[in-house]
Image 1 (cartoon, rainbow, N blue to C red):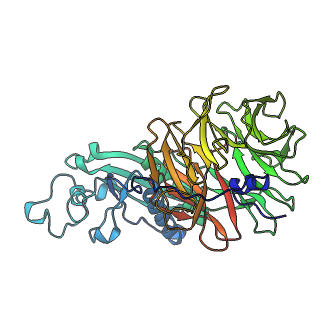
Image 2: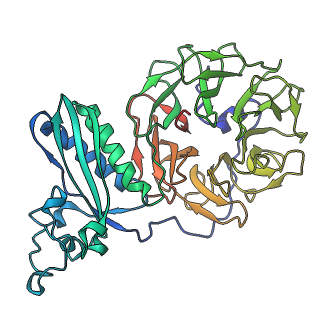
Image 3: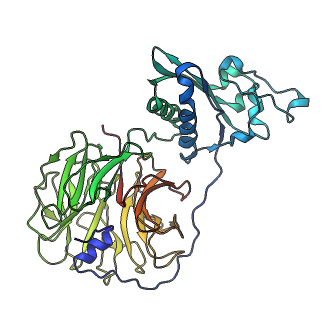
Length: 460
């Protein structure tokens, strides 16, 4: 069976010809990066068994801060030659006039706020081996309060982990998360990405950490499984599988990795399930009534099925607004055949969000319920799928990818700042992440072809 790599191809398999129709380019700009507070974090050092682990620690902290979207990480090449490691190394007050801008020594906190560093915040610390554990002492300072070192210290904490590379990396994530929390950034620690991969010869469901580490195979069906969706509590994953010939919905526990009961209607296709914000309902696309696929709502085990609308065209990929719990975005051909993004309230009239040109698929709500990310063949690269963001109220658009291959299936992280998506630049598709302004793109997978990613919140 042909491997299906996007929702639009699934629709094509059910009789929908996804035509590429020409249309006008969208007026607007590709997103960019704004001004952000600057932070300097010189390399932490360590003694004993912790010393060989500090390179991994320092690189992880840098990566987490740079990829957060909240802070600008000042290049280490701009740092003074001498750097403090602990509070007792710091000197408060302003530097003497003759050294304020020339050859800053680095031990005065104010040195880090002057050129060439020009940072707003300073992170310092050191590692050690204690009782066969990796121990990290970390502090964060507000440089604007340099006159009073006690008032300048935002926090000082002790972190512990296993005395190996994994332990150092986990401690680095925790230290970076504590810094970012001061700026209102939710930590991604504990979140995972669920996706479909053919690396074993079949398309199976896999999971990995948010940073691409710890890849694990969830299913072993030897067929096609794709389009995962994760429950709001991060405990369950639903996906569509061809295990029993026709596409059916299956649900697995992400805690036990075991299948959970779900009643599939007798139909040629049950597909593309998503969960309600409270986890009490699921919504999916099915041909249970005959004819084209329509949208249905049911209990989490598939019982209590109720049809949401009757359009006479294919309706699929439904997603429920995480804030309202009622507004639904979905993909439909009801406007004349080409897939477009629509919005409706349960039982209400549907309104088209996209302008009817090209193919628009894969809608996903932002955590605050104000925006959707989706894939579209319009914009600055007509004819190829790229990732867009739309403000649902104003209809304002931002294009996040361009001239980077085929980009599809975006979903948001729980922090509202990151998006995971599938990118195909050659023969294979890979999973990437980026900030929601289109910057800081990072490749997570490199083995096989990997598609339909979804960001899973940390299990509660």
